[in-house]
Length: 437
Image 1 (cartoon, rainbow, N blue to C red):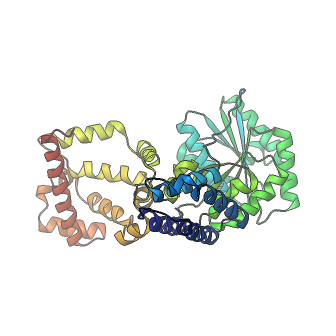
Image 2 (image 1 turned 90 degrees about the vertical axis):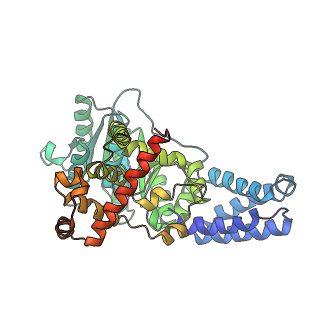
Image 3 (image 1 turned 135 degrees about the vertical axis):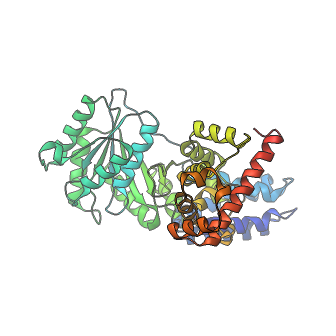
């Protein structure tokens, strides 16, 4: 996430943190580089100018030049100003005193609006907020079907034209959907509205009518984080016509330059509430300015990492595996398969490792991390018989050749997996003997 911005900004600051004393000229040179990095990252000129001015005001005063560790103090100032630029604090979703809470999802076509609606429903379901989806895009072919397929994965009900006999009036459709949600005692209604290829009068008129009719508690703009400053312009356009309450930035796991996340709050005064960081239904994170600033400055996001682990890991299964690992028999390849499944649920390995303090994009690139390798390992284990998974000792040459053929991998890869598994098994037993339980 924001790898180019992160690397360049961290590079500028690392050149200053190693110095025991900082002169005003060194600070000014560093700020000139920070200004260049932010502009290259697609942060708007006005916001970049204000940001650098605020950092300069604090950095060339007594706060940094007289500090014991001036370089570290400058990093803290940059961090604090990044947090302020992105909104200062986390802003959660409003909750209506009289259920259901109604959330309108708006945006252009291709921004990931329908997928984000389903991801938000998945998140609210985990939070016990009983979500209900309304498919209000009556123009895009198969939009309703797409939402129903996604909702089926998370077991959330969808109300659309099919439930209302093909009703084409969006306002009537959404009102009927809210009534249906209320009858089912749903606590939250997420309305996936229609998008266009660009902002036009017809789109805005429909959304303005919808806002007036249903009086939503939240209007969230879904914007593609890959579009840089275009995302900011889109946010401005929607904000002029509607009472936007928040923004969801999607595709931030891609090669986003970061300018949109740093600019949207400053330009529109509309908070970023969530960010999409992957394809999976649980890949929607609450946007926390402090934690995001930490990631950008390569300080890591340990809190976010723990939250991901809590979502992905089954505590009962983990306890059972830990207990078995310390037992006389130890782990088998069935347990190994379960562990790999939990790791994969945490998301792409690069994203997970990128949340560790001190880990940067160059390190991850050099490590040659490939998520497909986990799939390859999984294929090898699944090609084994139940007996072979429970008793890897029986894996002779002919069995390994059969497993390699069945999984589409090489015998060498099968041998390597068995060897690594035996090493892991011994290590976990050793930890048990040392009292690590």
